[in-house]
Length: 282
Image (cartoon, rainbow, N blue to C red):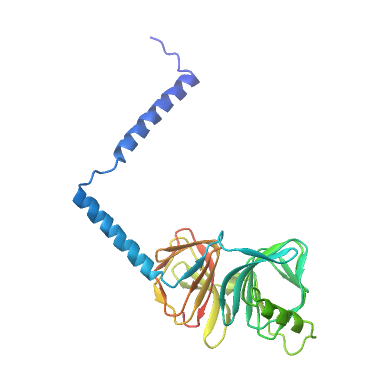
């Protein structure tokens, strides 16, 4: 009797043969189930009805994917991508090359900004990823620069409208006046998060009598109920993924839901952090 152990080559060959047999059995088990013409038509009709319902629910919603849209050069080292617009200013992504800067300007509308990556410097204020800054109408920003380069989301900006940008720049030449009511909420302010449901947290950023801006954080598996919008609602995906009914939003996507539209159940299987601006009681 030969008790000599198999060589490593013999062992590997046997293992590969077993894996090939397992793959064959799995493929046989996954073979498509044959359908007769009646079953096939019923399945096709049900699928088309589901697609039609989904399209109807998303009517009026605007989504700008991270890779979509057109970048335009604002000045050397700075470019802008338009996301949405309203009577209260535009929503854009703005990208700063290292060492670039924007001139002093005065805001026409309430302007909100979130650094998505890199960093921005405004005098002694240093903003990093997921830091939030809000400036009321009439407030003035000194020079905004980025030593290391940055990408930021701005809402309520004049960028995208040449005449409004010119007005902001010209009024920015005037000296500061009045009270500076700008506010910054830093990403490291973890104690500002409030749990509002199982796996769902919010961080209040800004609000007035009708509107509010918040960060929402959804843990993996968290859900929020479907809802309708009393006012326009803007969403910027900061990280992760979230389903709004059948609509999937990923990191960097922008979404606008006009007043009167609705969202199905909100769900995240991997977790998500998002910025939402909408009706105060949303």
